[in-house]
Length: 242
Image 1: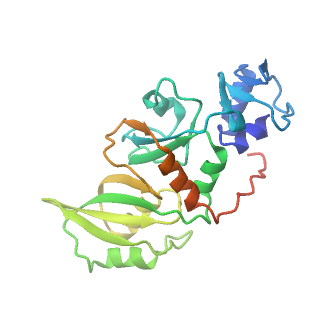
Image 2 (image 1 turned 90 degrees about the vertical axis):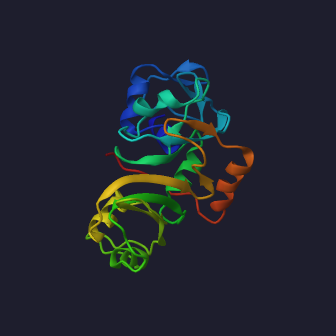
């Protein structure tokens, strides 16, 4: 049961163990008490009454995560619709970063979005102090790929979006997802970040969503996400204990 829930993206190892211990997980309507409870094909597993995996209605939500929030259900689930089924955040944005965050109950979709070989473009808008020029060496380094010590980033298309009185908004497109990558790239380039916002993930954009607002993706948008991963293999989810 523990691994079944983890592999579907329902929660972390610690989350799942807590739910099972507290009697919040059911298997075909009966409370599951064991971490190693067998789950056979076709079984209906639910957390707090909300089906997980094949027994659930597939949903994907787009949220404009506000600044000064952790990417955890405890910090952000209050902004989801009251009637939302059990969903989990796909990836994360750090405490001081705002912007698009996807939530779903589809573990396979979540894994594909995060798969390192998906190369799914994620667009970030960054407000940095000072006026930059398109020929700025820092922007050039981002476009070519930057040596960040523990890895060299893939080439990241980067452009100036708009100038403000004492700042410049730039757009950075990543096709990988390393920890605090945009912040590390800007630090390497010598830029001081004023604001960082994720604008889009693949074909799904932030649009008119304001901070703390959520909307459910329509069928065409979900189909667009599915199409983006048509050639990406299902990740091998075999894991070792942390």
